[in-house]
Length: 255
Image (tube, rainbow, N blue to C red; front, side, top):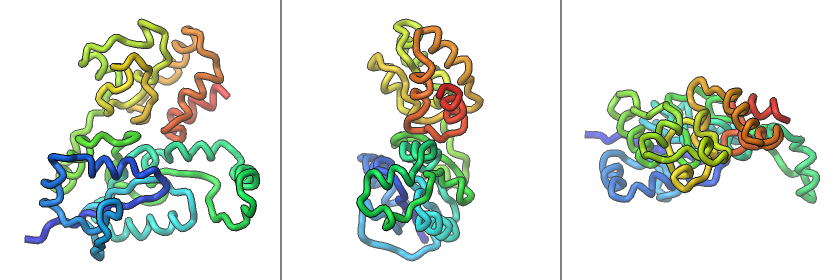
């Protein structure tokens, strides 16, 4: 019986989400036994020709070459899943979307005329249809396994869409915003990290991007009441998911 062919593609990113798959440890052998790893340069030099049953795509689109390459990947993929903040919202490099990229290039490079880059860093879904988006910076390896399992077995991945605040309640973690006035994006951020920062008495940085229908205006008002200035509030939304519409719009209100 033919095994499904899995491909893992990299675009502009740090490779952290690909490493989450290799970090599956006990489950990694089961994954390798269930699929043919057809293209995964982080793990092997072996390459099998497409088409591919499942493509996992990491990274954002920042060059004309990448914009063309993702269309080829899409045409060869039965299912295409984007993994991580770069692929789902543009990532940290999307901060360029709010600046003058040509001015940066002239300031940094002796010969910027050799650069071939786009003025923006954008999510994969801005270029091709995507079957599922898995968020995180990096993604949660258990959620990644669930997405691979579900996709290859023809069902919808069971990924929670509630806020980080729910995770804090489930873990019995004291609210850092209410108890200590620590800036926190938990109320507007989709859960997924396993309560990592609040459990260490730090505010949520929004690594998993905005939850469904986030009330960013109410959170910003609360942050202001706690003494955070407008510019600082804007910066809070301008990190790993700065180009996600809900975070982008709220940060621009505080420029």
